[in-house]
Amino acid sequence: MASSKLELLASKKAQAQLGGGQTRIDKQHQKGKLTARERIHFLMDEGSFEEIGMFVQHRSTDFGMEKQQFLGDGVVTGYGTVNGRLVYVFAQDFTVFGGSLSETQAEKICKLMDLAVKNGAPVIGLNDSGGARIQEGVKSLGGYADIFYRNVLASGVVPQISAIMGPCAGGAVYSPAMTDFILMVENTSYMFVTGPNVVKTVTNEEVTAEELGGASAHSTKSGVTHLTAVHDVDCINKIKQLLSYLPQNCEEKPVKLAYTPSDEIREQLATIIPESANQPYDMREVIEGIVDEESFMEIHPDYAENIVVGFARIAGRSIGIVANQPVSLAGVLDVESSKKAARFVRTCDCFNVPLLVLVDVPGFLPGTDQEWNAIITNGAKLLFAFSEATVPRVTLITRKAYGGAYDVMNSKHIGADMNFAWPSAEIAVMGAKGASEIIFRKEIKEASDPAAKLKEKELEYADKFAHPYRAAARGFIDEVILPEHSRKKLIKAFAMLENKVDSLPKKKHGNIPL
Ligand code: HXC
Image 1 (cartoon, helix red, strand yellow):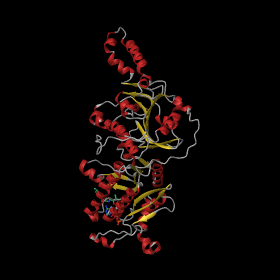
Image 2 (cartoon, rainbow, N blue to C red):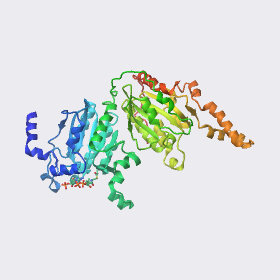
Image 3 (cartoon, helix red, strand yellow):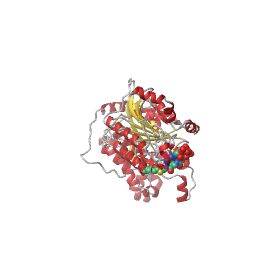
Image 4 (cartoon, protein in one colour):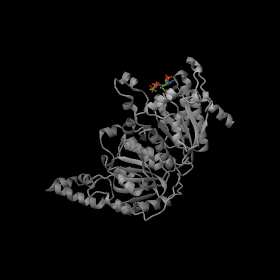
């Protein structure tokens, strides 16, 4: 069998039919894109890729389609290894009918997804397609729905990663949208439900495909894409890095890398918090000081920048980090940051990635914009996501933990396992000034020097609450630690929690406020 397959592949006819022909391949390269097979070549370990369904052909007979046949029908599917671990991959071949999805192309992708779920390994989709195969009508639409259904069934079972490396338009966007991660290549990919022409007709807006749905729009404005890449190979390298933090499936833990212990003291952490509570600092510096060197991979770096999320390693263990970011909007929680963080928490939880939460949050962002855009529902998403997460959960409060945001940001009360605070932590209903203005209003108003009275009351309030010791006295904080000891303490905490077993009450599924 193997030899006949090889003979066929070597034949002239097969070579010509393996893609849409040299002209179309050249066109793909001129656009700055690799072909489907080149992408697979860069993704998989050398010699590991086994193609499935190479000889599949479409069954369409309308519009003279029976005369236009290409082996594989516009998608390359198969399995192999990435850094020694099994993955399933499909790569749409734009050189064949624009990579459009036919009934048979959908069957190939579905077959692959079924194998991935049964064998517990990630599915990687390299998307480059003009959408539903127009000549096939409803058969193609049905094919999409077959894929969507499998995306949902596979969700939370095996990691699903989608790279958008060309067009992805119309209903086709909904398969990537239901996977765990989307990556987009700058300038050569776009995603939208309705393209510029329809937008112009319906809303009279003039917009290019790139402006409407390019990598930049989706990484900064909509948050649809988790990561962007400068070219195809960069995108593929990012997929490999992402896979390294994840397990093969929901029954496994992420791979732990070898690690040689050292003193783990990080002096640089002691000088990060500024003198004034209102002065910003970059939470990424705290992250870098805590995690293994160069192990941090930020997800959604350009969207809702007031919260930082990403993967890292601590003593070789894979962890997910959620951290308020004081340099952006003082690190407040708002609609976008709550959604971004909630999604990330759930991604980590379904794939057994422990969570580290770094807290410096002045509260929720006030305003009509926030209220009318449902900060209530969206803030609840984060609260819900943390509360139902059963992975090891560790919190470190670096500075402010005010109001409802204290509760939301992985507090002890919603199931966190270990809660640390630096001596600079302030755990209170609100900041000292705001609190004093409310509770001492009468006293301040009647004072001969109201400003001096306010200052006096502010100090009194700060003395009571602008520290972590009241919370520690109640056991809401397990330990107040010196910043320079953070890495050491967190390594021990995650090691201690390594075999944590926890479960939720029996139910069909929770009802997260979507
Ligand atoms: C069949 C298609 C095709 C499609 C492209 N081709 N899209 N064939 N079905 N959907 C073919 C072209 O005819 C052409 O064939 C070749 O692919 C390359 O296309 P070009 O147009 O030359 O490439 P380019 O200039 O790069 O433009 C790419 C494109 C454009 C922007 C994607 O092809 C396009 O607008 N296609 C149609 C997009 C579309 O409306 N799709 C349906 C969306 S609705 P030749 O032989 O000339 O090389 C949808 C519903 C999904 O997908 C529903 C799920 C619920």
